[in-house]
Image 1 (cartoon, rainbow, N blue to C red):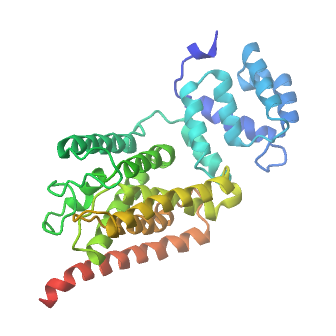
Image 2 (cartoon, rainbow, N blue to C red):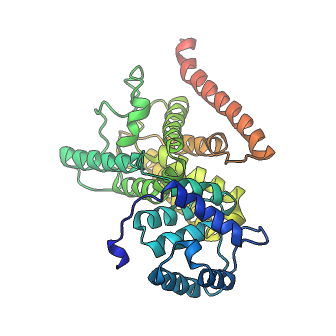
Image 3 (cartoon, one colour):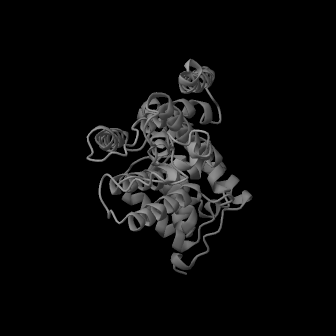
Length: 348
């Protein structure tokens, strides 16, 4: 039967546990890798242990030959097993997780993904992206400004942070769904879908917290340092995602896929978005200015909450110390921002 008609159901617990047992049985030197030649010989001699039929055996042999001798770690093993058995959903999940998970954490992550039943599904950032695009298109039509880099800015919206409505605290979160300019919309959606969704798949609810803390840190910093202008845009949440992923890459540089490409690409891409925010704040030919400090607040939140939320299954002393340091720094950040926001009223 052609694999495109095979059921893409979650791997059951028995099969999931057998995959890790099979992998460890043939990882004879316990270095987390199986040589391709060794694996090809093993699956030919022990087809039943792998649960392969003749067709699946041929596919696995072909995929191993295509690797040209590159060793197989557990993540590769899960991906190849899913591909050969026609578990299409599983295959896509593993492929997405490969892009954001360091090699030294993959056994734990991929063991959990084998049992993943899409409950909850990774829809949070997809939903946020759809809402952002819908609001942008609505205000483009409503304002009659058209599609351009510095607008529209819906200053009367009840969702954005406004210097005239500081008592409406919900705006400190809802401003993230109102974007200014087509580049910001495209930038935020790309980051949320290309990096955020794989991270959400691996870390589930922690990504919700990371994104929302980026949004909160962005609004607090903007109100503290630039309280006379508006704040809107999803860049604070997107920059929290970027900063978190960059922190993971830097602290696990040799363990990440394509780290030498990802690191400069994300820095340049983020710098372009921030440069446009600076232009819109100081140089754009319009009176209704938008703060650029949301980006910085999101960046700070992304770095701090990476160490608070993503400690791994066996956290080292470094991550334990980093957890408490970043937790204290987050408290200081919030306290200092609140003090700066309240200071003008206290002086008056």
